[in-house]
Image (cartoon, rainbow, N blue to C red; front, side, top):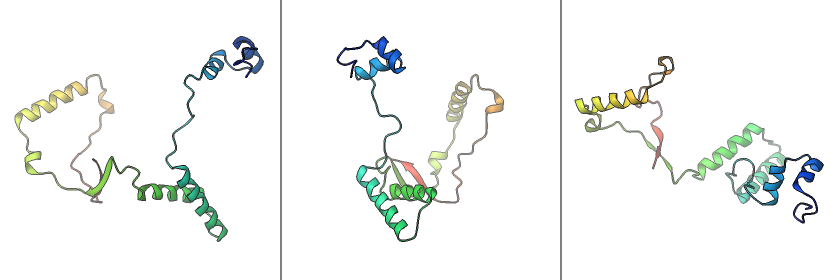
Length: 144
């Protein structure tokens, strides 16, 4: 408050409060003043409803552990389609023969791209990854 009314200089405030001058200037001038940490995933209303439900469950004799609460919130978010606009769940399909077909040009293009990608990469950090889509669960997440 003293700084805004200019009763004290930034240097004097720095010495008095032991806060760096640049931090004081940034706060007084409202530059780069953002909330610390990640933005909330849940809305205020959803968070309040979950807290009420957890408290009610605890009153009834079924308290939650911290892991139970995490799983509950994750399940809540998954049921409410938090990534609905980006991802969808569907059954995996094998690729068509026409897409899997390989010719000389595609192989040549692949190795040219690989050569450029691996330039300067040590051989001991390269691993083999098979992209044949072998999976036990046919339900997968796909980008829309």
